Image (cartoon, rainbow over all chains, first blue to last red; front, side, top):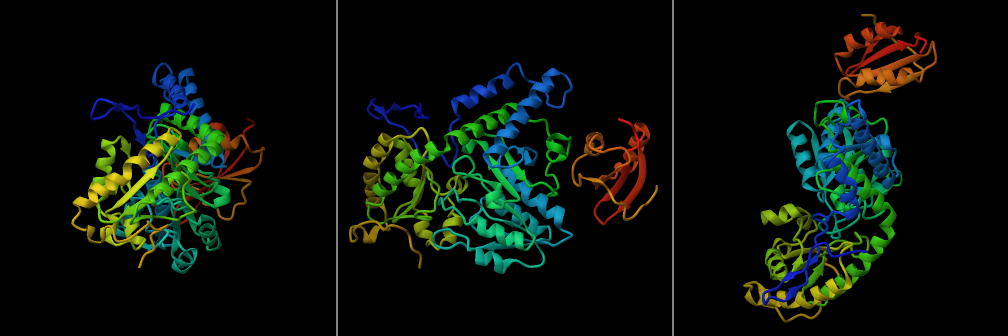
Length: 415
Length: 84
């Protein structure tokens, strides 16, 4: 039974107000079965996986079972899975680890402008350390052009890293084509699959990924645990030095409970994926259709080739933050851009790279649905949202053209 | 230290950039895969292996054939001579 992850709460007049959690790109609630799997390792099964006695053996077994499940989710060999503290550590390990291990071959790296900060900031660190980095632009839908990847490749290129899907605009990137270019030129290919793993089918062999980052809390697992897949035979300089955990590639006593939880979440995601996707797509399509009826609201990202649970827009004349605040007063939780940009009130680099004018990018809003959401949630939201936009526009000094135009367009087209 | 070149190995264990003491754990694991007389090649960038691997061979009764050096890592060659 799928239930609302955030309990309903009293409204302004004491009535029960519906709560709609539409921010699954920020994080997911823990699946109850995942919590159940984790509990013994937070209580009686507290052993260190490196210890030789029974208690250590139990911890080791939990970790290896989880490794098997995570590997199955992405069609990889269990030995290729390195558990990390999450997506950020996986991305840092991939970029820094591959760059340092291959610097004798060359010092050029290619990333896209639609990457998460953990990729972009790692790339900047490498630039300061003497590497050259090409930042590939994206088109108006947020797509990386494989042709541009090919043009950027040089004899010095050792690594290409392109996200599987943008968490800000939902666009799924043409990874197979990009991976083929990497393979042809004997370049290592990494993808940040944090927003896709567990949400849509991810197969490392089909995608052609040599390394792939993921995190558990994007598929109803716990926070603080993720994994980096590394294809057999790929050398990687560790990010953290210490003991021989994770085959000598990631030191630190394992977070056994979290890893066990990630394993369970991976198993559930694999089994329930089709149903979850179907559920999200239906709600998402209704949400998009409803929101685009509001004048001067545009869909961002690719209209079809996007994450099944992802709906993102820019709303003219108003700020994303104001919408978030007013929506949250109505019990609707959403985001404007990425979680980081949202907090810093900074124009999103992804939206900028789509060619959306800075003023319009301020009106960015992202809704990401999940297994706890229902048709009633979408109805309730669609009932509240137009009035919120209207109220904010009435206050907006930029709303000069308000009321002149009719319907919202299908998609923002730059220029 | 004995230096050797162009040794043909039956099995290679690539543990370059993996942390110490992975080289010793890998030796224990890999030597079991070999038949008597076969040669194991261990690739590692860990300097401590220069002492550890010959000592491990002496302790386990396997033959340390020698090592080769590349720019980034060492190649150790071990012939399985122990029974187990």
